[in-house]
Image (cartoon, rainbow, N blue to C red; front, side, top):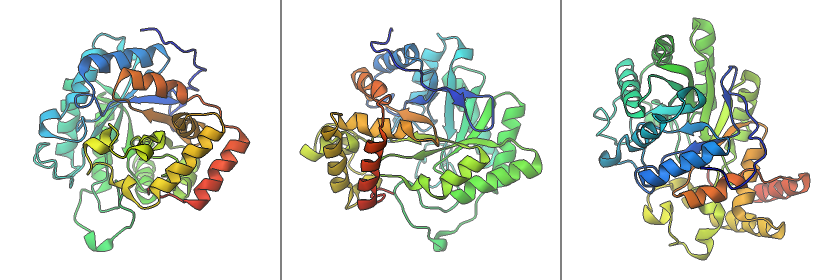
Length: 354
C-alpha cells in the first residue's frame, strides 16, 4: 500500500550499543485483536512499511486490555502478515509478561520471570509470530517491587522474593546464543534496574540491554531526570510508548469525556491519566498547539519524536485512518520557541501523570 505522504527519513539510528538500526518511529500493535480487526491491522502494517517504518512492537499478553480470549492475538495477527514479508527487512520486538498483574491465563500467573517462564514465553511468541527469531526481546515489566503503570511512590513494605536479575539476564543470554533473539531490552524500568542489568552484563559477559520501553509524553516526562543521564552515558535507547497519553493529548476528552476511545470504553484502563492535573495540563497544551496552527496530535507526537534521547517513538492506532493522521504527525517540526513554551507549561504542571 503506497503511503499518501512524503515523509522525511525516519532518522534511522543504532539502538543502544549495537548494530541494530531502527527507524525513529515504531508501530505498536496492542490494539490488534481487540479494537483493531485483522484486515485493518494488516493495512496498518502495509501502510507503515511503505512509509519506511519497518519496526514493529508487540507482546505475548496483547491485545489490551488483557483477556484470556485475546492472549497472543496481536502476535498472531502480526505473524500472519510477517509470513508474507521479507523477514530480514522487518524488525520485530516482543515482550515476555511479568508476574503480579492477575494474568492467570498466562502460565498460571505467570509466577516469575524465571528461566522456565522466559523460555516458555519466547517459544510461544515465535510460534505465533511464525518466525524463528525476534530482533528485540524485552522484559515487559520488572518482577521486583517497584512503582509502575501509574503508581508513583516506591513502598519498601511491599518487598517480596523474586527471581534474581542475574538469572533473568542469563536466560536472555541463552536465547541470544541459540539464535532465538538478536538483542534484549527492558520495559517499564527504573534507574536501579537498568544499572543492575548493565553491571551484570559487563561483569559476566552477558548481553547488554539495548533499550528500555517506558511511557513518555507531554504529561509523563519523568524519564528526563535520572534515566536520561543513565541511558545517555550507557548508550541505552528509549522506546517511548504512549506518546498521546491514551488519547488524552488529542484533546478529544476535553470536550467529551465519553468520546469513543480506550479510556471511555475501559474506564479502569490507564489510571496514570486519572490524576488531578491531567485535564488542566492537556487544556494548556491544546491551546498552545492551536495558537501555533497545529493540531494537538501534531504537537504531542512532534515533541516526543524531537527528543534527543528517544530512539524510536511507538505509535499505535485503532484504525488505518487514525494511523494516517498520527504517522505524518510525528514529523512535525518543533521550533526552539515552541519547545520553550512547552517547557513553561511543564513547569506549571510538572509530570501530572507520573
